[in-house]
Structure formats: structure tokens, C-alpha cells
Image (cartoon, rainbow, N blue to C red; front, side, top):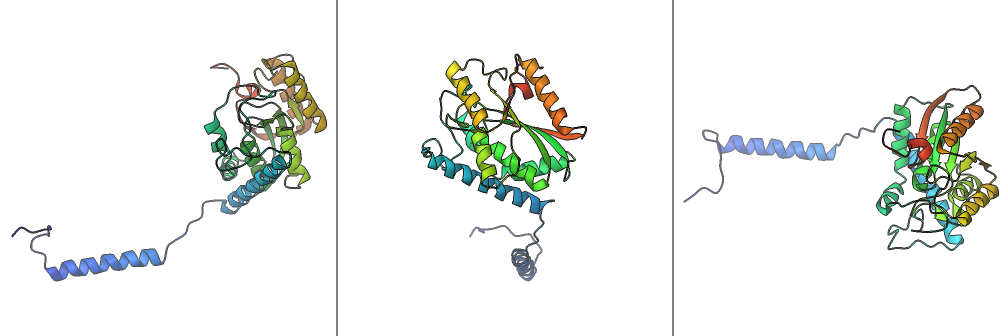
Length: 268
């Protein structure tokens, strides 16, 4: 008769039984008394993620009030952060998968980690380039900044690529205002550009650019009107320095693919 299992030679059944009992006992011990090790700055990460969640819920509620109900085929989790494919204020193509991924409040915890790793601390000045294309990441960045007690200088791109903050009556600047009105965030964008290609809204219709101007006006945001991409970069840098007022800017946070932040060509 063939043996159904292998056993080491010259080892008694009693010894094997003892080894098995000890192994099972150790397994029960480990499962019964787990050791929980929290990551560094765990409290700040959790607080930022929860604040980001609350901010996204506030934006969703306002969009519902305006009649923008989430499309379950486009936004299956009904985050309320996803926009439309094409509107008058859509600046460029975009990937829905990227927008869905970014609509996760846990990114705020990631940003807390990255900012601390960059060496910033409470009271430090940071500059931010916000993009209407990724409202979810904007929200998470705001939440991380507030949680860490930083002093942000924010310049926003008003337009959005596909599936971002591109409802003509509720752009990123409007979302920014909602967060302030709900007293979730106590800061916001200080200036804005059209965004899009070369940060000038190139390729958008005259009507679309006019809608962006209206959004800046109704939210009381300073309008930057560059004449070229290089001029946009210079105007942004000048404004950051002006508002920082001799205080060092400890970090620059870019959200999205704004031309003034990441350029338009390889090597730029």
C-alpha cells in the first residue's frame, strides 16, 4: 500500500505531533494578539482623508442642487466629482479612468506624506497650481494643506479637460467657493488663468473663454491675462513672490498637466 504523505525518516510520530501542536499554538497566539503599527503621522493622514471626503460630499451636494446628477455609467461610485465629456469650457481630451482614480479622498493622506517628506511644517508657505481637470486631487491637496496648517498661495486654471470640473455653471473656482462657504476650507485660489493649451485657452471658442471670465468674476478671483506661455509662467512666478512677501516658499504643488507647470514639449 502506497503512503499518501511524506514524513521525514527517523522522526517519531510523537515528535511530529509536538511540532504540529506548537505550530498551531503559535498561529493561534499570533492571530489572537496582533501587533498594530501605525505609520508615521497616522493621525494627520486620517484627518486629511476625512476632510477630503467631507469636501467631496459638499461639492456633490451642490452639484445635485444645480441639477448635475452623477451618471452611473460614467461615475459608478457616484462621487459627484466627475464632469462631462464635452462642454463649452472643455480645454482638451482627458482619460475618464484617471479622473475616477483621482476621486478618492485617500489621496489626501498620500499628499500629507509627500509634503512632510518634502520638509514642510506648520506655518510654511507653499505654492500650488490647481487644475480644473482634476477637482478630486485639488480637494485632496486642499485637505492636506489645511490639516498640516500650511499657508498656500494658489493659482488655478479655470478650464478643464474631459470629465473634470467642466459644467459651465459650476467650474473648479465655484467648487473652491463652495468649500469656503461651507467652512470646510479657509483659503482658496487667489488668481486664475484660462488654462488649457499654453495656459491661454487655445482652441476653445470665444464663448467658452467668455464663460471662464464670468466664472473668475463671480468668484472674485484675480484674472491673469498672459499673452504667451512664457508670459503666463512669469506672471505666475511674480504673483507667488508678491504674495509670499519675502517669506520662503517651501514647496510647489502641481495638480494636473497645466502648461505653465509642466510645459508642452519633452524637455521643456
